[in-house]
Image (cartoon, rainbow, N blue to C red):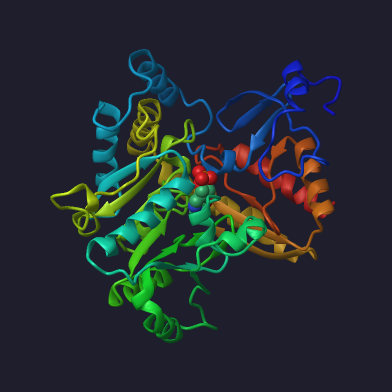
Length: 422
Ligand SMILES: *Cc1c(COP(=O)(O)O)cnc(C)c1O
């Protein structure tokens, strides 16, 4: 039951709402939010929390950014929605042009959808039909990596690692290959050998370049990404980069693929695409992928089309977000965040309960050997310190808005220290 002080709408909706990843029988009602600005979330009781995870990593310019809110408002006054089947509008076409100019070179085509999971579904369907259109009916499987996470829909779960996210649905999973990311223990020779043995059945390989986020923030080098990309090219496997989390500066370059100097065959974007202000995702493809869909009949055309594809409000928000990336020093801000994370989080490795600290760009993960109860206590203690964090698996992590001020970031780090050493 919500506390007496909760707003009426919370108490009224509580018996009806069904929340994400939540055991509704034992869950406490969530904190009611009445507004947000910059890096701060405002609660109904007047408290403010600094958001250390940018609303699931999407809010890259901070909440209620006036340039984005203004663009949405202006677009809403003119055209809030129109179908993209047979009709065109400026925001989607402009965004397609801008995204292909910004993305790793060669990704010339942009297919819009509404969520990261669907952007991944679209990528998988593109890869399957790419081979079929060329008369290859054997390449029907995918390679994903251990600890990978690509979304919650069935296809996306099928290429993700088995985890608590997928456990209830594994029986319905498409049969795919799950490999470790190459490392000192599992070298490239062995990786290439595995690929060599299965490649004739493989349509594509999907990976989160540099940082596997929701699977627990495992990190690997840019060299590993470029080497995996090379093996894919050698064996004719489509290389699909899922940058739903890493895209838009999060790892220190505009896209993680940039740091590895690779162009994927297919690129998935979401989360921070609209600066977190509205749902939108995109799947980008090269000319070589796109050209396989050409022909005289509909049978080779790509058969996918979400109802709200290329929604004008969402595309206006994304165009405004790209304006901000062009005119404000986001990548320099990421560099400063990374330096502060190194200074602030590295000393935690001395703490007995801390297993490991990993940092890349504006991502800092601290693995703890906590029980779920201890994580829940830490979360409550952080809220008391004015901080919003949500542990993921064994990690307490920071992925703040890229615009977070040095003082706010210091507040997050100090609160983490305090709570972990209590
Ligand atoms: C969050 C995420 C997704 C899924 O995006 P949704 O918008 O939640 O459907 C897919 N891939 C990666 C890498 C993600 O982090």
